[in-house]
Image (cartoon, rainbow, N blue to C red; front, side, top):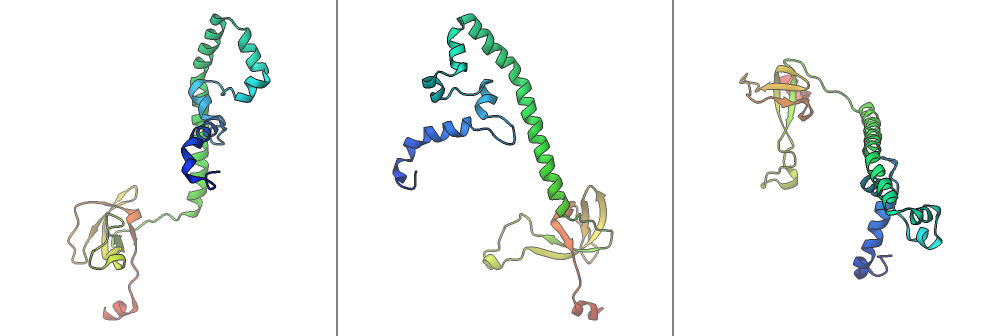
Length: 181
């Protein structure tokens, strides 16, 4: 719709937002509108066709309607907690699928490793996109647990700050380095 007349996007925005807020999400099993107000939105078609829900609401007195809305808002916390549980379960499923494909890194004291240049994505202005992304090699000086390590230079000077193992990778000496020893 917008491709045909891109300058009229603002006139379609309210319709797009309405559609977004009233469509069920697979993650929560409900609509954002229902999570906010406690019930599904009344669609314009329901009013013109006079659906059962609209007909019932018209028969209620003001007190009955207020009581029903208050009850829906009281039940809303339970609906929100159910949606949160569904989201957590979905995230755990994604995490398990991801963890199946990842390899755990573990290093021992004395292993040679490369260390990524932090912050990731920083570039040396002299080299541009050819900037180094890894530096080293370093020795694992101490294993701290939970994936944290202390490094030392090849000279034996220990670094003060620990580093997460995800910023390290195994260093394999080249044939030239092996011959030098």
